[in-house]
Image 1: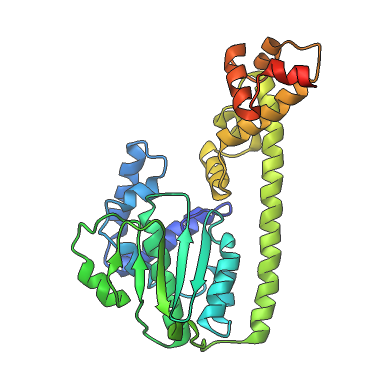
Image 2: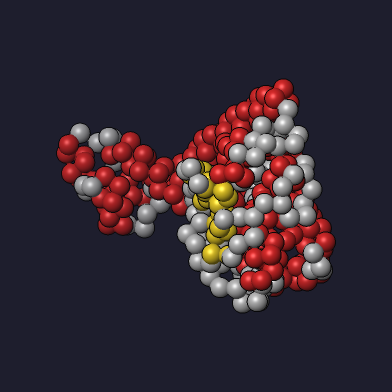
Length: 326
């Protein structure tokens, strides 16, 4: 359902899973790896996303459809144990952070149709849309025992350069809507309320409790990382180097890993540095012993004017005005 590396080592496991799925649809692993290597050589900040753009259009849609149940552990089994597709999608939406923390699933239902949207900040992650829709639709086709057609399938891909329209239509039962704001799909209310063949209330309750524990653990881990990072940034600002490389090294991880984990939470290293600077600025300005120039130096600014501009952006007033108001 996603490409996020949510835990140490999970990225390698997921890449292997993706490779196997592509292999089953006829795309050789060597071709995929070459595409990734080429993206890395070009200096891509998101090699897998950019590599996918060089592969056949919608190949992830068909690859996702062959991924076996259980590949996404508790979310897969919890979804399958629900009473109906509606219940299963509600659970998937609730616990999708265990798969991809930076994605929100929106469900909109009326008497005729149910709409599912996968909302993410990335504007051009075509792989995510196609892989996730491929897996989700196939999961519920298997779980309901129905080869249902979609009412609509939405993709952020701007154009199908590879002439795959007929194949996508045959697979999903509808034309692909391209250039959408978010990836997603819609089904009829009849399909939405279909009972699932493996529904098991006791199993569902047990898996839901387990998923709740995992979600709390993930949230605790995220809170702990943010707290540690803020401490590191505060120290690094005083020492004159609050770069992402220095922060990551102090935290015992690579800069790429740190940036990925922050992106999963919808925040960036730069945003946290700004947040810490703003808080420290207020604290330093409380001290009459420090001049504005000294405060600027302690926050890592090259001169007082750069600090003053930043402070006005944060607080709507200059450091001197803020100090007089205290």
